[in-house]
Each structure stands twice: as C-alpha cells, then as structure tokens.
Length: 408
Ligand SMILES: *Cc1c(COP(=O)(O)O)cnc(C)c1O
Image (cartoon, rainbow, N blue to C red; front, top):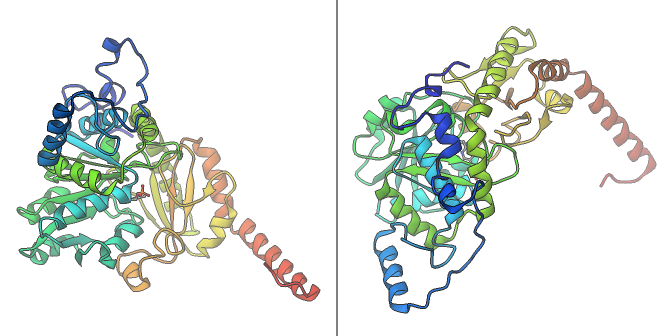
C-alpha cells in the first residue's frame, strides 16, 4: 500500500519508519546497551527525605514527569516511559501516557474531564462496543449525546468536556473527516480513537484532534500477547492524565511497556504488509457473489468488514487458518461476528442504527500469504464446513437426548 506517511517527515525530524525503531531509545548507546532495559522496581530508594517530599509535591501539583527515578511504580516507570516517548513521537504529540488497557486509557480521559465538572460527552457511533457501553452506562458519571459528525456542533453544551469519534470505526470501518469534525468542536477537545489506523496511516493531531487514543493491545503490540492502552496528547492534558493514573492505578506493567516499545519498531512494516493483503482480500470479496457488501476504508489498513448473504455464523465456524476470535491487530488473521461478540453489549436498535448489520463480519488481516487466506476464507464462505458442524452438533444433541443424558 503506497502511503504518503511512509516518506513524509511532517512534524518529525526523521521519517516514521526511522522513528519507529529509534524513538525512546536515544540513551541506550550512552548506557552501553542495545536493547531497552526492563525496570521491574515497584519502589525506589532515597536517603534524602526532604528532596523526595519536594518531588512528590511537584508531581501532585503539576502531574509533570519527575526528574530522576520514580518514587513508586504507580507514578511512573522508565521502561513504560520509553514506549510513551516513542508513541508520542510517532503521533507527533508532546506526550503520551500509557495505561493497563485501552479501556483504562479512556476511563482516565473521562475522569480528567469529569473532575473539571465537564461530564457531558458528545460521541459519534459506532464506537468499540465497550467504549459505547462505558459512555452509555454512565458508570463514570458521564452523560452522553450520540450524534453523527454533522450534528456535533449542535450537540455541544456548556458542560461538554469531550467529543469522541473512532475513525475508521469499529466494526463498520466508517470514516469521519477529522479536520471538519475538529472544526465543529470549537474549544471542546476532540478525542480520536485511532486504534484501527495507527500512526502509520493517520496522525489525528495534524488534523486538529487534541487527544489520540489507542488500544495498544491491537496493532501497537501487534502479536496478540500484550494488553495496553495509550493516550497521545499535549503535555497539559498528559499531566492531568498522569495524576488520574496515579490516583486510580490503571498503570501499564513494565514488561508490557517493553513489549509495546518492541512492537512499535515493526509497526510500519506490519501495517503496510497487512494492509496490502487486506486491500486485495477486500477486492476479491467485493467480486464474490456470496458477499453482499464490503467495507474497506479509504485510509487503508488491515481491517476488512463484509456482509454475507448467508448465515455469518457459518463463516465463523468454517475458518481453519484464520482464527475465530475477538480482538485484532495481530500477526495472524482473526475474524469475528460483531453482533454476537464485540458489539453484543450495544443494544440491538442502537447497533442497527449505527450500521452494524447482523450479517456483518469483521476480519483483522495478519501477515499470512494472501492466497492461503483467500483459500480459507473462500471455503468458509461456501458454508460447507459450518453446515457440516451444525449437522454434527444436531446429531450429537439428538443422540444425547435419546441416551437420556442432559448436555452439560
Ligand atoms: C479493543 C479496542 C478498545 C479497548 O481496548 P482494550 O485494550 O481492549 O481495553 C478501544 N477502542 C478500540 C477501537 C478497540 O478496538
């Protein structure tokens, strides 16, 4: 996939691919190291009580990162800080603050605004199912107004603390013009959940967003083995996020910080390779009579969504190479049925209104060979394996009933 960002230097002094392997590692040579060290300390020694007290006061007052070692691991961690530095560089922001998960990151953003009395959120559907739920449930004392991008300006109230959008959106891959939306937000900060695009395909702050959120669990980690979340933003907002993170404890483990830093180094290569395969699969699906509709974003990316004429659950039970599982962004391909799994928590009417059809499937394309993926997908679309499995299940249920044993 040819993308201007692969060579653009934009806000960075070096190209994205270079930053991806060097950012957050500037001091390693000086330290005599090649790989980033992992600091697992939960606490840090200090014989100077007055100096330590002054550092604690400084953090409490400003939320600025401490000079020198952290006092306690809930405050900061040097390994996680490397990941934060690198991600901020890739997004073109002053700062980034990492959390235990994407949901912990969103929680911290909402708490920062609510603590300022700004409890109202204007949000554009669809969002990731749990983000939708967090807003809709009012669990954190926030109140949400759902609207489309054109309705955002009218939905803003004096107590609106945040406008939130996902682009491309989970699971429909619907896109929003960030620049136009940022304009509609006026003084209210716009948060873009850019999990699907990654900084390789889109840098929302260049288009006027103030806050960029990632579920780092997905592409940033990239191997399906680490959970994390991160918010890239200006230093003022980052300082407030650090204070909330310290108060509420949703910290990223240093081991995860290490894995995410390592993940970033291959991010541009992984995203471009998987995007090329996804674009090819999207084209083949669009030509396939078994497929009613294909969704593939103009920005590119490794996610493809499609609606089938048959039962989407037969496709899920028919894949063999592709893993039927929730989540996305790993080196291997995953497929899931949003209405049953990732967006089940969203009320049916709201789901349908947001364009999440019951026939929609969402596929995260990995780094496998395109022909192997197509062979698996095409066989799954035929419904043969899914139908055979249903027949086996029904036969098994009948046999158990006849035998008088209740199925467990
Ligand atoms: C997965 C996901 C989240 C939540 O992230 P976790 O790391 O699972 O907490 C938020 N937004 C999007 C778009 C996601 O895909």
